[in-house]
Amino acid sequence: MLSRIEELMLVSRCALSDDRDAFGRLVEEYQSDIRRFFINLTGDVALSDDLSQDTFIKAYTGIRGFKGFSRFRTWLYRIAYNEFYDYTRRNKEQAEERLPEPAETYVGGSDAKIDLAEALKYLNEQERTVVVLYYMEDKPIKDVAAITGMPDGTVKSHISRAKAKLIKFLE
Image (cartoon, rainbow, N blue to C red; front, side, top):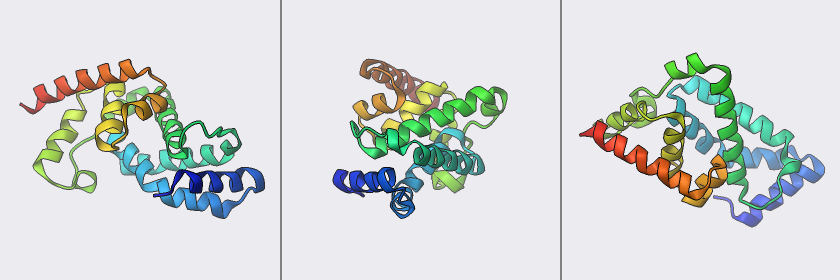
């Protein structure tokens, strides 16, 4: 994992001299995390790859807009979050059909993980997103709030409601 200083150095090289090797290093570091984030939200590997690619393209073209107030990783997740919700707004009916389904390709095959993937279908988009970020991506509340643009209290409320729904489903 890159340190904050390493991230800032790579971002600076990208922004100031259009250093594609530096951006390539950032992609190598974060592509599996972003891809996993999308797989957990969509359940579709091909769609996840497309959304990941779009996220990195937007990050590359907008890297001069990165202010450094948060980690680059948080900024990248915010772009990914926006990309997912732009996609769902454009393709509302298709997005509902692409909710996560149990599959060994991304849940690892254990019964508990399959049940959880099935249970995620019953959460609304916001609940599913905060659950994925908080529990599956191991992001603290403040990072989830920064990524989603929600206040901390709203994130906590979504997590609480989602936990109640998941417990009910898994019982």
